[in-house]
Length: 155
Image (cartoon, rainbow, N blue to C red; front, top):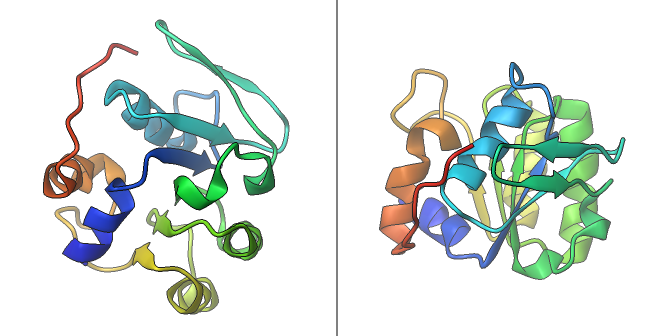
């Protein structure tokens, strides 16, 4: 899994499917993590909402096909399993190289599809948290493993 995390963070771009403008939701918290680490991130939300932090406002895109460079984008998912599968199918066709399935975003069918169709998949048991691999818990270690330098940024 360490190689998968390293590959994930080696991408020049990132996206969060299921991004939310509600600070209580994980879609907001995951997007905020990328923002706080000054990583180039695009929120994916089919409603086309803007997601604002004190220092920046992000325009979301409705789906992976609206990403500027999908083949250079690692994708975090914060969606229910049925939606996750649809997003993964679209992302695969577009050449997205790596996906991070946050806890609660996958079932066996989603996990099987991801492992068969992506170069790098982070999901399931492992990581430092009790619920499995999560960027909020394991992300900084992953950035270090990939040699990514980042600066902390305010929300």
